[in-house]
Length: 481
Image 1 (tube, helix red, strand yellow):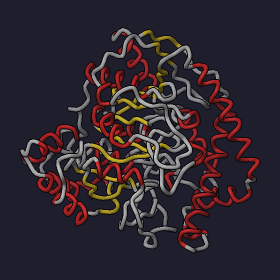
Image 2 (image 1 turned 90 degrees about the horizontal axis):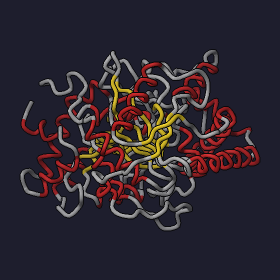
Image 3 (image 1 turned 180 degrees about the horizontal axis):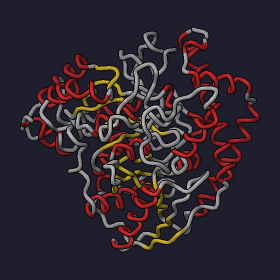
Image 4 (image 1 turned 30 degrees about the vertical axis):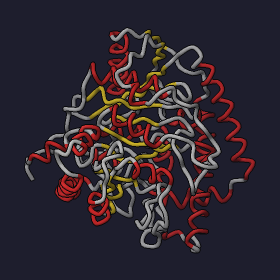
């Protein structure tokens, strides 16, 4: 293992400091990350679109002013547009037919922070399934066990960070797609509040506010510092999150005080969570108590079945919009052979949906969001497992007409703790505090009240200090190639 591999073990904040002090150049750091990507990507299939020429050019021109100037980064191949780069969103419908004409506002801010985009990472088709096994590119593989899912849909980004290719990578979250892969790959992943990060100029209201943009990272401070760099309402945005009191990176290490923590382990639907997931949450609850927080059993009194059905209606409606939006952009009629079977079936269902169906489901979600908001008048944080199961084997979300019911039930079970925060717009984070007997990471979720990322960052940093995870790496990822 070379000297620059040791640098790639550092978080993005530390890498940026080396560049800022002149101890290595952005070009050297970028070359090291590209070399590592080329060595490891065959194992994990994390990066589906290399952009090395653009990255080298950006590194050669980098200025030291940005917070993360010269730090290698990866962009998920979903939603965020990067000028002159292909955007396929895991779908044959777009593949080879679509190149972005401009940067999205989020990407502009990522570039302004000095990040060097090396390529694009794998996802599920349109991010619809909580894994990253799109037929277009093949399965992304979990560095902790290559026969298991990375989680999704930001699975390629999570695999790349877990393997030490980059210290953090872009992710987005419509039902858990930051937190799910963070849990499966042993990373920190925070979904910000609705409206905290921009979606413009192409999008405003994505599925009535379900979608949030941010990253998966190895350290809490990287997540906080990058949110400082990207946060803020862009021109014409339909939502705005409450203003922050101070820079989020200044919350890291700040005393969180004695938080009122609600604790539960029952998913929205079905049977109790897997014993490993319950054990992870219980261990986190004990740790929170040891750190001086008040922990008690409690959960928002929502109707899990009704909420999940309403959420599914919005999700199906979103897919119908996605396909018709791309049809309009590409000037191409969608055909069954352009899509995976589950996507095509869902699209046909969306075509039968009425506007009233969608708006009634939205009304029901918003009504339950008020119930959750009232719950957070009594509690600062809600602690649960991130997932109801450890990382599933690859192929577990495979779809056929014969397995349709099992397919939907498995998705519902896997996301049984994550999708509520998307419905309410609250911030929520998965924290890597637990590994099971098989050596698989099991994340723990902490949700905060709307607009209060600050409390989550304070708590996360406290947990990180008490149970450090930065030194835990998947077996073999640092062995000599």
